[in-house]
Image (cartoon, rainbow, N blue to C red; front, side, top):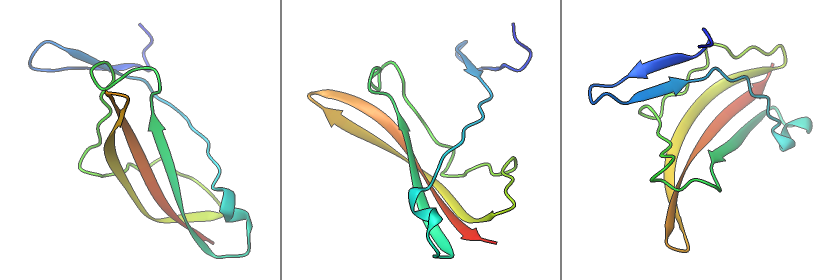
Length: 103
């Protein structure tokens, strides 16, 4: 097993594999001369419904410990889980809202 994968064993015997990810995203409006922006990023699945992939957030907290930018300062970040119904199937998604300020 890859040593960068951190399995979490739950009390019922189920195992959650936590894979480290590095993601890069662009806030399209941040290239203008405005000093601060709120950038929403939504993650979800179009393939797996909520019975197969149930995305969750931890109390809306966002871990920013690895964020590093010489240009931007994150002033606030939150996460919100939504369940959307498409043709009788429920899909979960998480929207992260990040407020950034140009340094």
